[in-house]
Length: 75
Image (cartoon, rainbow, N blue to C red; front, side, top):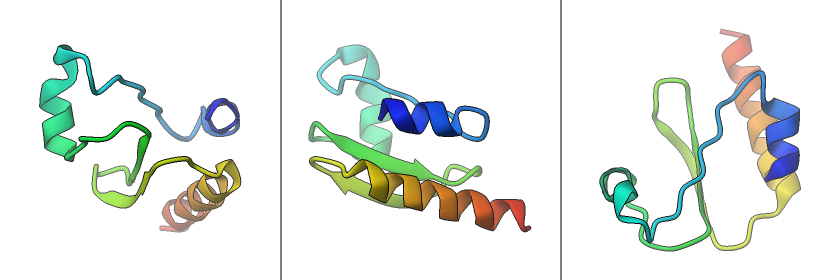
């Protein structure tokens, strides 16, 4: 995920949190996160585009980010 943040840091916000920590209970429930290693890609309005659960292939996420950003920059 570090590569993603380096490549897209001017175009996207990245949030990391530990679902086991109580201070994240509200957001965990709002997003329906109940397992570790869950990744959610949201559009600028906060709508869910895609969710990954489990190990994430970095190139797949880069491809999704590139497509999403291209869609929004053309609008």
